[in-house]
Image (cartoon, rainbow, N blue to C red):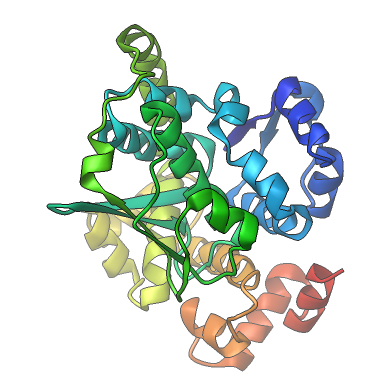
Length: 324
């Protein structure tokens, strides 16, 4: 995926005391800031979130989450602020969120409340504190900016300590929980937005939809298979027939299409297992035994041998390098 990093955004980070070049180096991401864009995969993106987690203070996090500071850098915020009210704004932001990163947002609408949850693209991979709190604070800021009302969530929860500055900003005492949730009163989301701009929306909507189509649609059959394997492997149901059934083709057709792209199903399984392993290893709460199971191995010894073959490093060596 491509991340646009304008000179203005780099200057904003610098004003917050953050040197983006240093953060990229820590996340092992090539520095292409002279192009004003970064090309990263999901694993690199997650590493960058973890690096931000290490360096950003709560006061910086609040500034980073304030719509007034970042709306010029994020097209989904333009789309949301142009909406008629908070409900429509959330729907637009959720729709176009994938343009700016592999964090997904789930929204459930009830009679009197609306519940929001955040998760990373890969299953069982927890969002770092910075990522989760940034997303929660950003939505609160978005609703306040659009409505010009001091909207506060009914409930905020997550597995982290929120800190006094963030609690004061939310005007709601967060609950510590295993998952995460942000709950708003539905009536607050129906307050008209002063920032509603139909002309702006008509101008940017076609371009946003084109971008969304480009990032949503796999360009190769291999990408289709990888997307399905990422979801299926942790469940344990990722045989050739399982994946063929999920995408609606015969096993023979699946094999033939992969062969046309000079690969095999077994090669794609190994690649997906390796990618998932590297992502799961970022989660310090998962044991090696749990990771082995999540990526389709019944024995840790088999997983360890496979990991050494994939990376030329033992799992212990890889974990030690992550902590440096």
